[in-house]
Image (cartoon, rainbow, N blue to C red; front, side):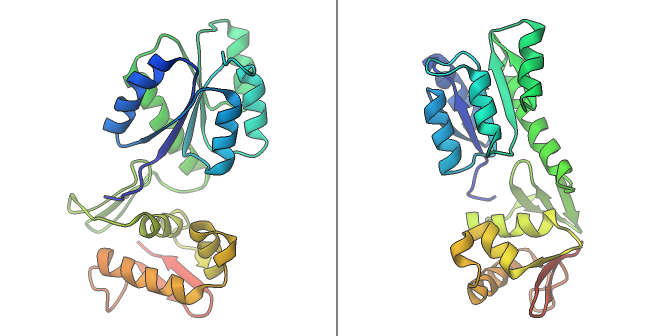
Length: 229
């Protein structure tokens, strides 16, 4: 299993929400990131973009709809709105401002987790990737960030998993050295091709049936790599 859990940023000023959501998210395989104000939440999104944002509309320092609009200016991931506001116009406003889903308080944890999974699946499908990709007995679950062979988890480092995900999401297409290095390590590393080769070699050792004759991660000489399954 990848050591990198999907990060779920919960922006809510109610301590009890974090107290019961934190353990539930952890048990479901997510990393719970807490923010108690809109300002803290926006800073957290800018610092390290989460995989999903869960946003309360009733925040102490800023209306949640304003926070949603500000977040959408630079964050493209899924946002699930939480709110005790049950008027239809509130839901429509939030969705029009870019929310992916809307869950009313009080809510069941199971329902919220299902909405989070659905938001992650839809994001992958929008990018043209399948939520679960199989290649022989190898399975890559891009929602749960889980890689298995014949049902047995394969341990990947966070960087190895992120590299694999970039290739799988672009299945069949050439992903250039620069694209991979920028997406996984950041723009400062876009020329570190030898570094990338080392990680591709490590990844092949773990997932290829025969690393000496790779059939899943193909090398496009001088250009990049291609995922074939």
